[in-house]
Image (cartoon, rainbow, N blue to C red; front, top):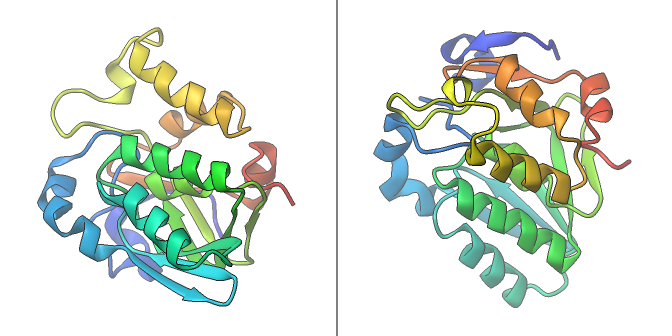
Length: 203
């Protein structure tokens, strides 16, 4: 896996994606997908593992709660293909729920998580990444004139993200790195060394 910033449409194995959804506020592309977000996320349970694929929607917390209630034996969430989210607050709440429930997270080998998918992954008590998996980050934008890069570093919006990462056991520098790694319309894929350096994995 190379660790360069790619234009969204230049990553061959992600060509099935029309857009990459931001970890931050909803973009115009995300708004187009909002009505389909809850349907887009698929959760399939096999044994003690639940496999997640699709866009994280507004009802993420409810979906996770229902899954655990119906499958109390689940101990691990495997993120297969998670291109992002349409609701950052719901994504953070979902990550906190995962942590509260004591669940572990794993990114499937040759799978990928981007943007908000990375934030959900961080909710795991134990976190691991399979060989060949892609972990993509970029700066967020609200789809208008507000972007992470044009906000003052003291803006309270930054603090929301920073506090979330600290809560998940990830250093603050990961947030600032993600803002510089790639603009909103590109994705930067972390190298294995960076995944460990930023403490995204626990094993």
